[in-house]
Length: 442
Image 1 (tube, helix red, strand yellow):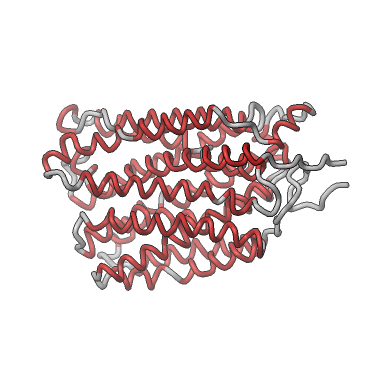
Image 2 (tube, one colour; image 1 turned 30 degrees about the vertical axis):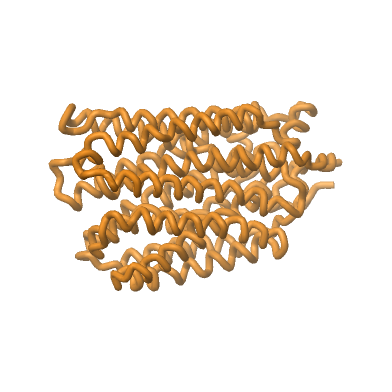
């Protein structure tokens, strides 16, 4: 028989919620400042001899490399998340992400060392991605396993509120940096932005060291049930929920990073919006998205994960064309509304529901590994290459947004189909070894 889930300790829940929120804030801060730098200045600093469109493509290529490293980091760290514990991995990934971001701020530029500069940028970006590969999945798994049934959706969604906070902080950092004269921004201002991640890293590290291990993992440890090879077990026994998580996140991830990264360069290069306006829109979008994550997470505790997630993804299938129509008006109000809706649905609302939905799909032995592999491989084929594909489509079709909108809608339709094929997991017993895709063993 399956042991009952231990009751939730309110102090442990609060601590896990805060640690998850701050850690994901750092991860998102790192990615947002890098993504914004890719859209606005990296083509000049690291690829100065290329034409503007090729320079942006090269910048987004280094951005995509970070996502290519995420599944590798996920594979590496998820082995330890189900063996050594969730907390151990969350401390290790934090140090790797924070250290890589700080290193980017210390890099020489192309003018100083030539081709070595973009190579070093690529290495640091891989370090960022390798660390981020198990970050959100780890926070989501720890929080879902720590929270009481009936409150998992709301508490786990705080991971995405942390992501929204990171986006907001990244936008604020760029808003402040853009007040500098251009030569100051290009010489030391951008370095200051990357160096500022040190502060967030230290705060998150202090919080994470005080974390309790999740009750489900503690029980696994006491019963000596920890798997020798969690990744191997996912591929042997948990393929179905892992593939469901992968395809459910595929389109959402694509749209999320299109809104957060590609739209910034599109607004500047195609619509002709002032560069200073972009971080301000991202800031408003992130604040609204953070609130949406909690609202949708709470709603999924009441109505179920599947109906809430299905509704959001269905809306995302229809959203791209109206978004581009609004952006191309050039109206600041229309642009702000379009970006905010994208953030609410794609960037934070949908992923806020994932934070409890995906861990509930898996059995206890390889939950961390399953969530990590599903999310990170889909992030690679989705969000990681999305800005690159969107930029390439825009160039190939002479600046037309229609192929970009079609691409966004098609990949999100895949996520909608996967969601309709997935089971409802609300308030599932997380101490069972069975996946949600198979009948519960008595």
